[in-house]
Image (cartoon, rainbow, N blue to C red; front, side, top):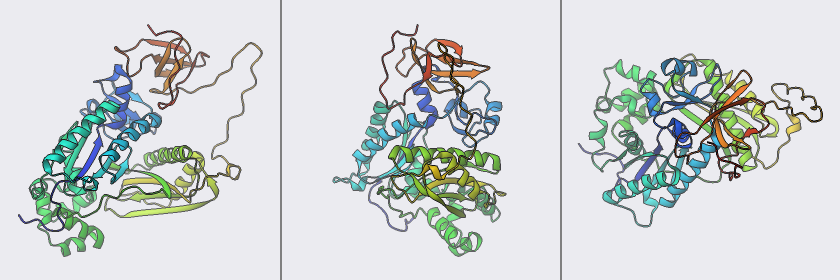
Length: 450
């Protein structure tokens, strides 16, 4: 079958995806959880799943699922809070390896990125691409202890689909000229612009596979889906994708966004996700020493319609409560009746100063605790499952569980030869403190945990 549109002579577009990223980092850092179902996300009553390990996915657990549903499907899993610091450290290492491979890299999120090997001085052929991709996977594992799946093709579309074909720890190179043979038998939802609503509309005209979609006239798709979406689908179904890999430039904004595996309709869940995204934006602002004056939300509906809403603050801020409250206010203007397939939060108008006194907290701060009597210690802490901790004598560990005034800790690190011992303490034990950031050096413990 003849290939249309611009065509590379070699499969020089790579897409790397770290497998079950958040959950894999947790299994790496917690030896007792290796090979067991792990679910990472919000642990509160309205929490949602951020990532599930492959051991949990066999029970039907997936991202953006209500945590209550995940607990019902896989009650024996380890349910852990997110540790963005740990994930960012691993991500930075991987992105550094990708940049060494080619200066043209386009990160999509913490765990995935495109790479254009045409940016190398020695543009590789198909055999060399396969060798480079295999070496990249080995380098990622050696540097981070994590596994990645890599796809290579002549376009972003093909590379991203290829990276998903042999997960986990997969490698698939799609040779030039074979793109249509790969795409044709696939269901239409494998195309990145096709959500459940679009797939249902296509089924209404007898289109189930990409080959059937490619046979539909472009004018008919435009009439059904609109100018932009119809034209794009017509091209993608025929493997015509000339979008360039765009290297990052100096950031004029900071944003995070996620595309859900299934459209999310529950508004309470969407607000929970929105709050978490605001927290991630605030963390990145603080990491870079910046604050933002404009808050933006991005919402994509199942029919691929994209809505953005923005609000300008009285002054720049990096306060998570300010960002979250503003994002929530903007979200009230959005109709979620048909579900949401993508949600994002961003901050623009960046500056290296902040004016916190302009902002009142969205929730009142708790009254300060009274000063303890001489000779006593008063500590009020909230412990979350999965959180890093340190004990003054037993060393580093992580929260196994907490509640009823107690906290249970497993004392182990990623280098522990066997699962570590478990100890229970009162929640205000003065010898127990939150562990250091993953990129901070550990202090030597005064004794080993036995």
